[in-house]
Image 1 (spheres, rainbow, N blue to C red):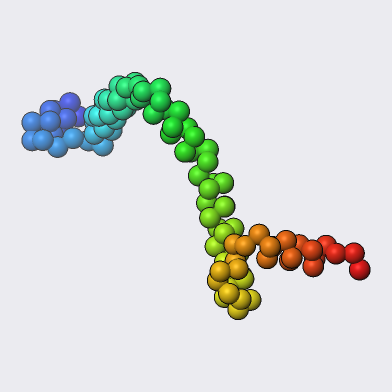
Image 2 (cartoon, rainbow, N blue to C red):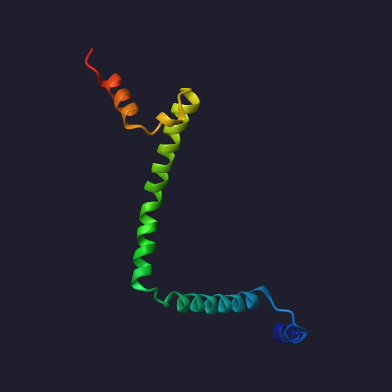
Length: 104
């Protein structure tokens, strides 16, 4: 039996060689890529696009500010065992600054 006959027998029985499966897989991938690109072409409104850009650029600074406030609170109330009401008082931090940077 020749190789062509074997290939025809495999095609009729539903079995494909790995090379043939690779070709069909490549075609499936190409159609998937085309479908993805066509969905990317849908434009967002200008306002939504600007809003998403601002959110993307500001997420790290916002998280840093939240962590700073949480650190101040934990350091002053939990570690320092001071009153919770004094944590966000400007006079408290002004006094702390004066203590650290005072002329000796």
